[in-house]
Length: 189
Image (cartoon, rainbow, N blue to C red; front, side, top):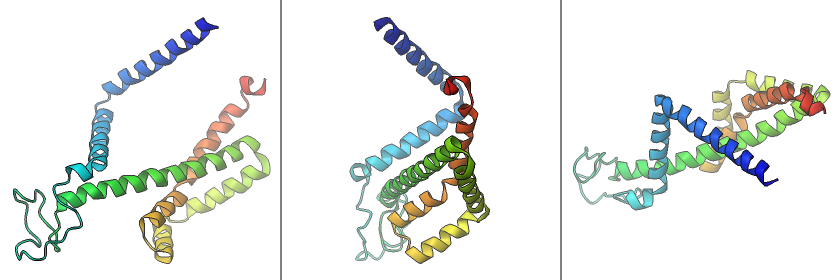
């Protein structure tokens, strides 16, 4: 029993090491990983790293609004005298938050519907896939704009709107995976 567990752990370790070796050979993937990690670290540590409060308006100084980049404000200031670098760093937090949560919503809906369609087949598959086809037929950008204009565009609405419009492709992918594995010998047995 112990040898089987040890062999399984060795195999998993070899798979992880093999994946990392292949990943390191792909320069574009490494660049993307480092850029993503940079933005993630900046977003997480923005309260510590931001040189100014991103919401602090400096209207008392006549030179503060629309100040070009200088040693005090590396990216300059906006029309209200707020530091653009600080606003950019705090904005990364909001963007990543919306991105992760809307992707999570899309994946949850897509995995559930795709699994039901692929596993059960028949009528549930037909209903779900016709709904997916109808949804894919609609222009997503305009659908997002219409929904946002009706419900408003605060952070939570944007997250839900993006999540609720991004699931059809995931549903198709999961359904295809279920259909390809469904009739294999190890599943039937």
